[in-house]
Image (cartoon, rainbow, N blue to C red; front, side, top):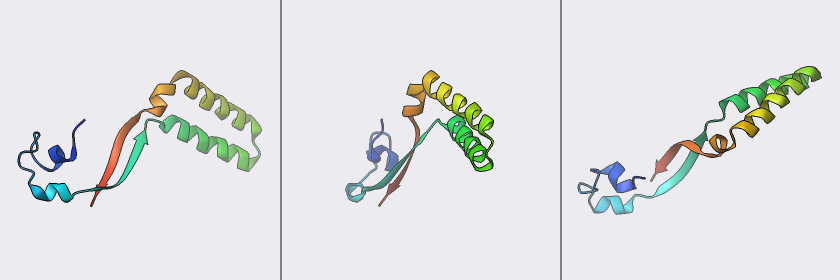
Length: 85
């Protein structure tokens, strides 16, 4: 894992001067590999709104299978969006 000095300067942090010490992390947002679940949740929601309960059941099965088959992939962040001050 790289530290903020390597992001702001050279890989070894050598070009990062004293100004780097004033840099702070303001916010970190993680993104996960959960696109299939989000899509299935939206479709399930449409089924609930429209009263199409067979559609709800279908998408609940898809959601449950995805959670059961790929639990580690769903918990592991794949991207981080970092805001510095």
